[in-house]
Amino acid sequence: MGAGAVNGSMIGRLPGKALALGPVAAVSFRVASRIVNALGAGIAARSPDELNGVRQILFHSPPQQFSALIETLSAAGIKWKGKSLVFCDCDCSAAIRGRFTDQGAYAAVLRRSALPGRLVMEGCGAALGFAHRLARDLGQKAIELSAEKARLFEMAITMGSGALSPLIDQSAMLLRQCGLRDTEAAKLAAAVFERTARDFSRTGRQSWVWYQRPPDDAELAAELNAVPDRVRRLVGELILLGLEETGRHSEAAAAIRDLLGATRSEEHPPDPAALL
Image: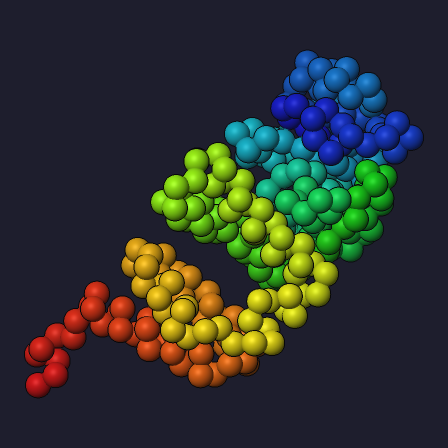
């Protein structure tokens, strides 16, 4: 069941042997025929009802057509009991999947991730087995997530991508203030972060520069005091997080807490009335 550029999705990347499609349905026979021609596989179905004759159904749709295609599939004359429905490259909520699992189907989501060579899946029953097989056919490893863990996974990716980029940008900004050209500052800042990431991939927490020896309190305070308030708070909290999570260098952690506490006090002076 498809809409949009299905050939550009993971369905279109399946090797020929794995792409042994039966009926291909869409909102119309014309669209179904176009998908079949683009994939070079399958038989265009005149009605989504024809999907009743198969036990495993792949679904792909771009966001703007997703709701309409779901309604079309829901209205089809399909006996869902025992069928596997896999949403490929779609953000499909548990509530949407529930519309089909409530009728006896097994449903799963299989989508790409920011991790190289990894696909992410969540779902239930035979649909998960089907999704694992698709991942193998695509030459990818699958990370299976439960519904309650999916947000944790996404936050892990966000921390290493969207949340990290501004920190790299701030590092490059400080290098530019030291006189480096824009492009050189960006490359050097990126190189420092890349080296840190490589070291962490080899030895984990032990690669942390302060894992064995504590930071120099006076030097670190001077560095933090040399940067704008927002950067001071952010970097100070990150360093403090490392010290607290590893349970190391309690004196250094206390010094940073004092420094951050003083900064907060200056920004948010106590209400005199509250002290009375």
